Length: 84
Image 1: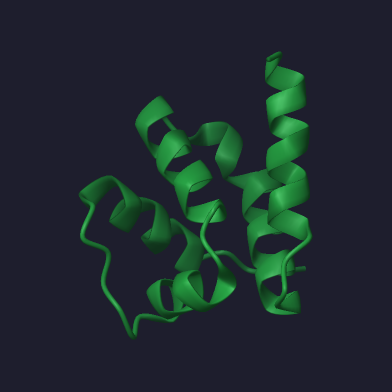
Image 2: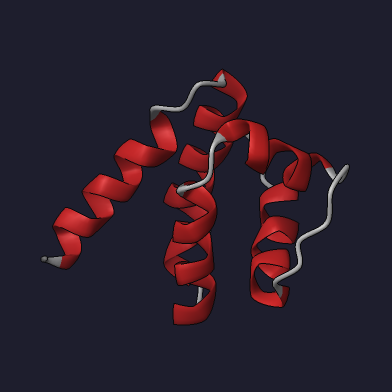
């Protein structure tokens, strides 16, 4: 699969969520921070984006902790995203 197609699929997963807050947060992250991630962090973000909102939201709001250290780095970055 081409990189452009992969990015388009990821964009779709990030912006077609059940929670509007997650649409905005993940969409902004994808556009601003995702291009700066190293490959391990990018893979962790893809894995996080594949999770259901009800599983991902507690990680982002801090009520639950990540067990994977790379995912924890990405979640820390997500927590600092400011939605326009």
